[in-house]
Amino acid sequence: MPNDFNQQIIDEFRANNGAVGGYFEGGRLLLLTTTGARTGAPHTTPLGYLPDGGDRVLVIASAGGSPRHPAWYHNVLADPQVTVESGAFTYPARAAVLEGEERDQAFARAVDTDPGWAAYEEKAGRVLPVVALYELAQDGPPNIRASSFGEAIKVVHDGFRRELALIRKEMADGTALGAQLRVNCLTFCHGLHNHHTGEDLGMFPVLADRNPESAPVLARLREEHEQIAALVEELRAAVSSEADGGGGGGGDGPDGPDARAEIERLATELEAHLTYEEEQLIPLLEGV
Image (cartoon, rainbow, N blue to C red; front, top):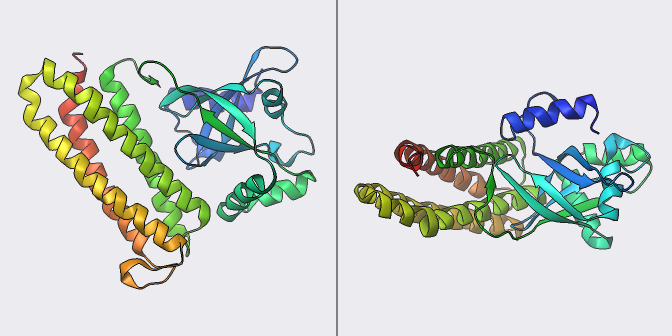
């Protein structure tokens, strides 16, 4: 059973679709449910996480610097099938402990972003395990924490808004585009691409069939998807250029403003798009 502190975070997380205050405010948080190695009972733990591409996220078994591994880590060693709650989505996942150079590189990225991870490791006197959580494919639509299609789209959009705000803050706080921040940007781009592709191929045809009068709105949204996709590609290119030590077209070097400029352009266009889509589609979706 979770302790009182953890339970408060879990309750707040679920009540607010991943948004919490206090110690975790402004951070990336997920809920990890494992099967107890001794009890066989489900055990839910709030954990900070690191984005790591399109199919997995990383969590670190720090236990706040305790000399002993946390219970959730022992659980995933015994049974790697877990459930992840990301705020908007709940999905089954497979936990895999990173080893060797892969682990060291991932941990170095974490420390580069937040030196507190190194302090935890020093305090613990042990190598902190890094665990990858791979999302498992499911049949049917994703499991979104919402009671209606209209609410679902708002929940998903708010998740993108929170992540984009975090990336913008991380860029504003740093003088260089560190390795983890590059991964954060590329992971965000991947998720946004998948979301818009799903709308174009899934949601929009259904709405067009049921609401023929919505054709102009859907045409505009598709056009905006294409415009945002172009901005996403420009951001990817800027991030990749800075990772390679180039300054992009501006000649500003690896710490230049190119990626920051691109994320601001994307943020402006995306927020306008999300707002318009909610205004136009939520009334239609509430009738689906």
